[in-house]
Amino acid sequence: MRTGPYKARQSAVQQRLYGEGPVLPPRLLHRGHLPWLGTYQTQLQTEGKSVNTQKSYMIGLRHLIETPLPGEDIITEFERDSMTIEQLLDRVEPFNGRLDLWVQSMVDRSPSTVKARLAAANHLINWLGQKWPEHLIRPKSGKKLPRTLTSRELTLVKEAAACSEDPLANLVVTMVLDTGLRVSELCDLKLSDIDMQDNSAMVIDGKGGKDRLVLFTKSTVERIQAWLPIRESRFPNGDELLVTKNGTKLQSRNVQRLMDKLADEANIPRGRLTPHVLRHNFATGLLERGADLVSIQRLLGHASIATTRVYLEISDQTLREIYKRAQSTEIDEDS
Image (spheres, helix red, strand yellow):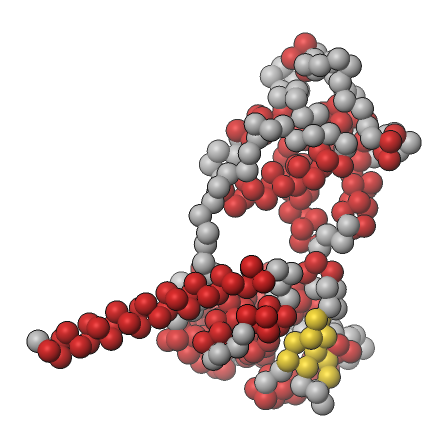
C-alpha cells in the first residue's frame, strides 16, 4: 500500500483533449502547492455553507476524486486528501472522462442524491476555475410533498412521549411540534438563547447562517421547566439546553434513536417518525389554523417562500380527502 503523496500521472488515457489543458485561476495560482482539502474547506466556511452542507459536499467529492480512469491504480485515502490544488485540478479536470465515469456510477442512486452530488462537483469545478461540461445535466426529480403524521399517529406519538422513561422524549417532541425547529437547531439550543419571560428563543446561526426568533407555547415552557432540574444534575456547568444522561451535548443521531423508540411504542413504522416530519406537522398545523405563508416562512427559517409554498399542496390534498370522505358519507346515507 502506498503511503506517499499522490503524483499526477500522464498515461495515454488521461491525455487532455485540448492544448496543454486547464490552469488554475489567478486567485488560486499562488496557492496551487497547498493541500486542496483544507483550502477548499476554508472556502466553504467563508461562503457560509452549513456544517451539514459541507459534510454532504465532501461525501460526493471524495467519491469523484477516487473514481479511477481505465488503466489507473486506485488511490488511497491518504493520497486523495493530501493532493495539492494543482494535482486535484489534474485529477478532476472536466474533460478527461472522470466526471462522466463518476456520474455513470450513480445510476442506481435517487435523483435527489445525484442532484446533490452534482451540485457539490459543480461547486468544486467552479472553484478550480473550470466550466462544467454542458452534456452533464442534473436529473429531473418529481416534486415530493413533505411527509406528515396523521392526527391519529400524532396522538399516539404524543402519548408515547408522555409515558416514556426518557425525560427528553416529551420535551423534544413538544418543542419540535410547537416551534418547528430543525433537529440541528434543537441540539444547538443554549440556555442563554432562551427567554422564558418572553416565551421565545433565538436560533443563532441556523441554516444558511441566519438567526431567527422561535416562539414557545405554554406546553413548551412547562416541559422546559420540568427538564431543567434533570439537566442541572447531568451538566451543571454547561450552556446547552439538551444533554444526554452522560452529560454530553445531544446530537442529531441521539434524537433519531429517540424517534425510533417512540415509533415502536406508538406502533407506527420507524420511517414515518423523524424530527423533520414533526417540523412538517408544525408547518401544516399553522396553515390549517389560518397562518399566512410569510409568517410560516419566518418561523421555519426558510430562505425562500417557494420552499414554504409546498405546504399549500399538502393542505389541498387534505381538503380533497375530507371532501371525498364527506361525499362518500352522503352517498351511503342516501343508499
